[in-house]
Image 1 (tube, rainbow, N blue to C red):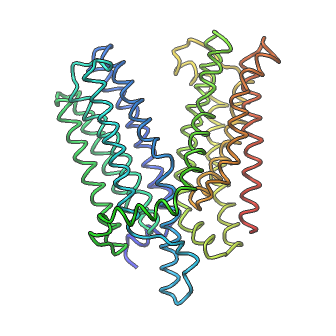
Image 2 (image 1 turned 45 degrees about the vertical axis):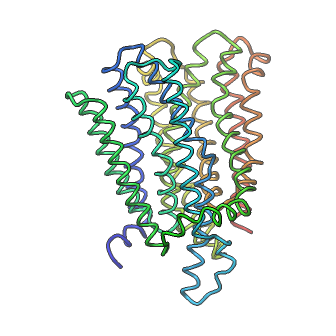
Image 3 (image 1 turned 90 degrees about the horizontal axis):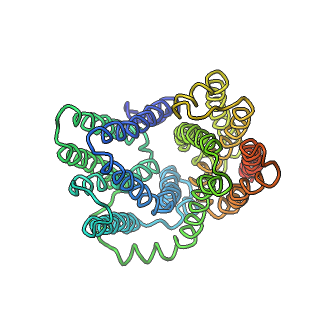
Length: 440
């Protein structure tokens, strides 16, 4: 077994490199703001923030399509492994065809092209006013390359190439962060972003090429749009509908309080408290995702092999490791949450111990929910996830109005209590789902 295979087979090493990548993602997000707020006039920077928001929306418009192909390709890959060992692989294969890869890659390319066309119209009509249209276009394209990058990541992960992708992506992010910071040293921003674009294209091209070779694909598989499209229509539509609805439900559930709180009160403090929770939740969910993705090769292998005892063991380990991160973050918030809140929001509001306690409860529940979502999405259980997401959506939408009705004098505390209880109830539903999954 070569060194790369040994690295791939170690859940601990894989988790460490994934966590390193999470750190680089967080640094990248900070660096973008740090650099562009210093090189753009304030009006240009406001327009740039709109561009970033539009880029994020474009990326989210794939609505879990790459998760679907991971689940299908993973079954196909594990079926091949079983067949090579002399076992029947018909059930594990799931009817996956190599032509699907070309169709999905084309779809993502059209999504990027459509977003770029809308951006060009916005720039041309003056709706998005900027004196640096080329910079904006290049940055948008570099951000949208995360779509084919996500396809490359999921495809490589499905064929036991997790470690290779993480190392490639770490190198990509280090290079792009260095090029971004070089702007402050005098590098032309347009050249910097163009070079970042080139680096990302090279890494994604290498990764897709590796998938091509590992699956034994031919050029005709990428070009057989009619065959691949027919197979996608026949086998993806149900999952696409459930995945899209689930993704949309989750996006609304996590972001709705920004709007419902604003509608319920003009006091900025409840909004700042929720934003503080949102930032902590996002950081925790990224860490949990890295841990779960490191365990997914073994979890999916045990599930498709019908080894329920091994599956229960792996799920328990994943939940335990994720809860350890939640406890560590909780400890930080208990010790320094109030100071962190004051620093983050420039002392414009304060957070009390009751707020922090409810945030800790919500983060613990979110940890269970996140593990369940990442595992079950990898197994293709999108309809099941959609059913579990609806109570969260309803609770998220109702928390602010109910808090205003029940306890207007302490709206912030009432809202957080209702929101945390919603997450706790949904987490119990997901915990039950994981138990039934391990017993089935």
